[in-house]
Image 1 (cartoon, helix red, strand yellow):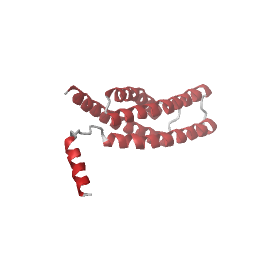
Image 2: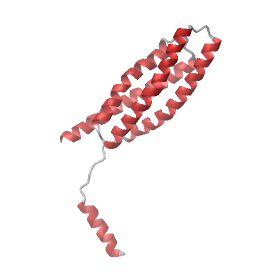
Image 3: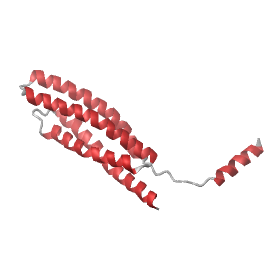
Length: 154
């Protein structure tokens, strides 16, 4: 048993040490953002059911705003998957795509925060949280991608 331990430590010493470059804070944010997105979508759809029934919502605008929410619900998981994959595999390209997908989402959440026909308090809270997630993830993704790019070049 003693010889086995010595053999294991000598083989570990022969392996070159590699530094992990992935960002744990970024990965944690992606994880919690995924759960927040489920909450965001469910609450927002419930709000539109309420708004459509209780408020004098123009029918053509209601349909377009619901379509926008559905587009967010389709784009956001793609962004989170690409960003997470890029972070875990230390690859710049998926992180770049995640960064690119962040831009239309910033615009969409800004619209739903400020410019939709009826903005209620819960709309403001949900969209501010979403913009905060996007902003912090954008900065951390950019920094992480630069670290990966720098490491690839050296």
